[in-house]
Image (cartoon, rainbow, N blue to C red; front, side):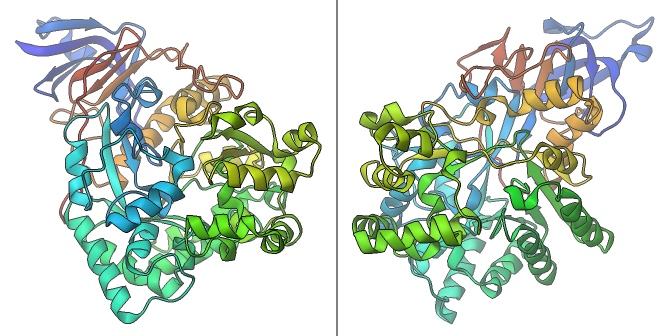
Length: 536
């Protein structure tokens, strides 16, 4: 007798093909049999230790979050319902060029401070690793869902070059190449960059191309948060396409949006650029989240020159009135590179999380609203937040455009990613609602995608990018990472007003054949592990 038979499910298998009705049998963490309805007529149906009636439910592969920031959340929060309840069975972490491996003691301390806004400082985490392999081994002790890792280029640069704005020496470049190679040998699936974040933004294209050549030799891919999503967005996309084609490296564009007023209605220009490259043989995919606002840290908006040297240098510059005035001018008048070349509009910047509880009353307000409440200028409020919260403040930026979101979502290279930050009292609802929002809002309510198209973008296509030979499809022999959802009811519970509510209409989620969500509730199962790169 097998472990489980899921009876009478409407199978959407992740390939984009039409759905079909079937019994699906799971044993030993894998799909061992799929008996389609027509084939089962007049035959004895498969038996199992447990039977699950899936009448009225869609069975699909588990969703793959191609852009996640759960690097510490997976370790500190065994429940991890924010993702498990959405049907996510695999997250890709190490994003935007900044994470916690490979490091030494110095850079670990610096990075914990630098990306506090993304992951918290980590007082509740035992940082008992330094290399990529050791971090993946730490995940293998048991996590809620599976995780794949990208070597973060900014972290590598911090380790070798530091936080200075300068070119790497030949010796430093050789060491960075070795570190990237080691990370890939130890199981990373590719390389990420955050080219509006320090210190990754200080790397010139030649340096990035050299690292991408290493990535290509191991069969990985390059995932850049490129140099602008605002005034220079199209040029930044073109730069990444050209760079990776020169290096012979597959390209996956992170949270591929066209934001700010300068890009209203310009998604077709981006898609034409990508189509030309794809038609010429380029290997390109991208991910998006199904919302218009973005999310980052308040410190990320600062100009690159003000961030040189690392977190303590940033705080020192903010504390000096003359230097702080230069920062304000870059932010409000010139348009800093940290704010994508666009002068900041404080009425669009909403405070979503703080590390200092004394600042909690400002959460949920825009910087301009908080400034009005305090009787001061927006810059005064922003500056005090940065100083008192020691760069830990997270923000939403309400700068996106729905027509761009839908156009990019329809593209042939599209996959789904939440870009979810799981901290702050009012985080972006995409952390809790991305995948049910795709299925409920954009499939059922708007018809932007068919159900089969959408599921393929959330499962089979990401698995192909990750080169996973046995995930992302409902196939015999494949891993039983599966989700059952009600297509008529699936919806995000999370809203901007209540961003941490769990979704509706997803009663069952399996990781490695074990229920992590059962009857709509989180079990205590920790079946997730590190998913390592498949050797070339």
